[in-house]
Length: 349
Image 1 (cartoon, rainbow, N blue to C red):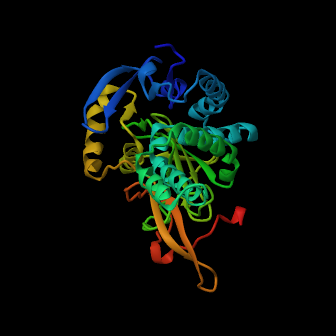
Image 2: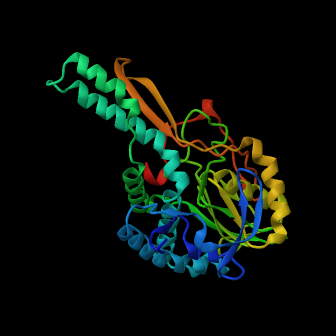
Image 3: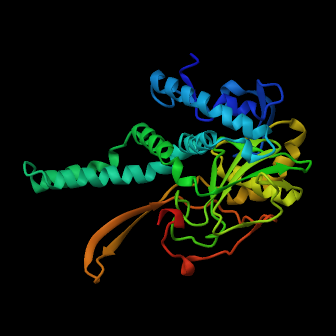
């Protein structure tokens, strides 16, 4: 297999932020709980022609080269003021790019893309005057046999995500500096969106780019994670100059690591095999709650402002990860469905 045919959805430079030798990484299998002490980075988080063409792979490789500099700086810096405004925007774009480009993202969005495509085809069939009612019924009945190609939708979603990175610019960046003897780990879907403020909301999506209470966790190495939080909904305790928090509580590290376990599609990665038992233990605590994290697709009637029916609408949202995230350095309310208010963060109202 040529290098360009083996296309990574987590770039190799990102793995090297955690690797001790720059070539290999420890791997934990999310499904069966087995671990591997050393696997080549080249074979991780990749698939044959995942993005379809070598031209797209080349374009993504160029983006990775642009994004790698700011992320390497974040790994080593002790003060976020060392990061220029331009580098910070690149960091936001890197996070959005990473979240959108993975196998997890493709799998998650497929149910919604499939449903919308079939609804569009059904509408096109129904309005075709050259077809008889019997033919329309036959074609519509056969739509379940039709499968869409997820690649085109996926590439469009990646493009949109990068373009909308500035919607995260009102979130406050915080460097989490791990001062414990346990590492930060990462998964094959490492850019994790969460919302502890709307932690008990189950019937709606709360992970939108401008949703109040949004949190983003992005590991940078075993000792460093970048956290982005909504400053209107969270109070960060023990924050130092330069927006850094020293994380000394093992429960905080475990909670952040559990996000990676839930976010993963197939694999979790870590720097040193001496941590294999630790990774196994936190996986075992979460194993029964693990799911595929697919987008929820709901069809429901809609109404005008005066109660007049407007027909059915299709609503989709990504569910929050099934973890009750409590971090000692974050203070916030926790709201449920009855308290939910559809709104955007104040910077975008």
